[in-house]
Every structure is written in structure tokens, then in C-alpha cells.
Length: 192
Image (cartoon, rainbow, N blue to C red; front, top):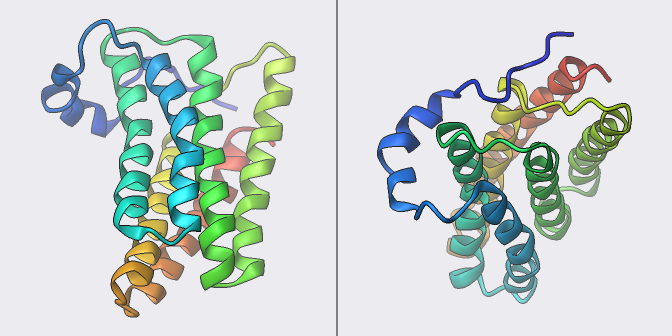
């Protein structure tokens, strides 16, 4: 299995380097952004659970985008830590899995939502066992693509629910289905 260099830049890092990252004060570390995501997850879930989509949908999108921010900050500013390499993806999986449980299971299909959550749990458990064996595996392009597709799929579903655009529901299901394919591929590339 090829081990990805955690300092190697992803394509979105080049865009972030010249747009968002310069706006982030130097004292804010990538790990602080990850902690912020952990802190915000219950609030995202609260607003979605009470069906306050005017707040919940934009808040979910902002919190999900902190995933790209903390990783780009770490790579661009050379602040990669073992803690961040493990907990950043954990925060993502908790965010996505909980929103899938709250929204996808209710509005799409129980089995479909459980498949997404099961694959996320497999990735978490695999990462935990790799960590116990002294191996921290950083995200690869398949994992990044999976997360991007999950966020896009959930956003399409939330917009469909929020604004009543039923056309977005099949787009959401198709996007989340593609995310499932990338989740399976990433499981194999991480050596599970």
C-alpha cells in the first residue's frame, strides 16, 4: 500500500492559498479549525432537527467547508500534526454521518443512509487500528473525493427539503451513490 505524503498539496490547496488562507490570522492553527468543527456539529444538528433550514443549511455548508480549510492551512503553513491527521477526518465523519442519520435516512431511504454510515464507521475503525499500530494514514484523493461528494449530495438534499426543489432529490441520491463508490475504493486504498 502506498503511503501518501501528508504534506503533498491537493488541487484545492492552490486555490485556498490565494483566496481563503491569507484571510485566516496566523495565530489560528489547523487544529483550532478542527476543534471548531467538533464544537459546531451539535448546533448544525439542532437547527436541522428543528427544521430551521434558513440557519441549518448554510451552517452545515460553512462547517463542512472548514474541512478544506484546516487541511489547506496545515499543508500551506506546514503545520501538519499527528493529532490533526487523525481527528480532522474523524470530525468530518461525525458531521456527515450524523447529518445523514438525521436527513438522508428520513427523506431518502433507511438502508441507503445506513450504508453510508456503515462505510464511514469502517473507515473510522480502520484508522483507529492503524493508529494503535503507530500508523497515521492521511487522506488520499479517493477519501477527499468521497467527502466532497457527500457534502454536495447532502447539500442538494437539504436544498430540496428547504426550498422544495424536488428535482434535487435524485441528484442528491446520484451524488451520494457515487460517494459510496469512492468510500469503498478508499477503504481498499487505506488497506482495509
